Amino acid sequence: FEGQAATLSFGGGTPSRADPAALAVVVRAVDPTGEVSLEANPEDVTPARLEQWRSSGVNRLSLGVQSFQPALAPRYGRAHSARDASRALEAVSRAGFRSFSADLIYGHPEQTVDMLVEDIDQAVATGVDHVSLYSLTIEPVTRFAARAQAVADEDRWCALHDAAVERLQGAGLLRYEVSNFARPGARSTHNEHYWRARPWAGLGPSAHGWRPDQARVANPSDVAAWLAGAPPAVERVAGRARLWELVWSMLRHVEGVDRERVRFLTGAVV
Image (cartoon, rainbow, N blue to C red):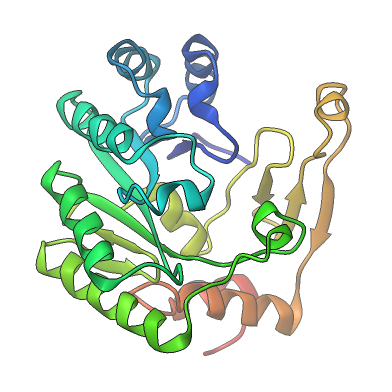
């Protein structure tokens, strides 16, 4: 990679548990020109931590709320209570970050449309300018799969999805990607790199990147191996596989397929 990074995102795992001083070291080393985002658990949000994050260079927070419903939040494996989530979002709204986002989940078989609409209204009331709305999926070899967690049937899923989109857009949070809604000027510029096929570097163990030479890069998942300097795995993607991967990714975004970008990266005309 050449040139200065445009964005930096602390995501995956629980970066809000990291020492803010360590985060500051990374921010200074990367020296991004724009968005510096941190994923945070609501239970980690305190006035002191908010000030430390801001001082370290973080200017955007993304809170993993999932649900404000007391009956549902524990079902998603969250350590915080619904009240914790409300207090955390309210504290973030007063902390002076450039932007802040809430993650919400829909698709639990016990979730009603009223529950989901109430979650959205509660998030919007804090002044949040971005919401990531994720459909509940059950991946193999997870705690959810082990306990045979079910998801909503198709009819309920559609009702939840449609009600959520209508509520969010009615509140001024416009959908710009399949799972993401934002007020004007509050899109996640870091995440748009993925959907618009821009290169990015993964910095930590298990982190993935995409190089300008059209290769996937995956850092070792073993922390000791990563610290010892074990090289990343590199997978080159070319031909029709790369073409369809680009088209699929770009179709997630409201702006659709960037034909000039596809032609530049693959030589194909779409």
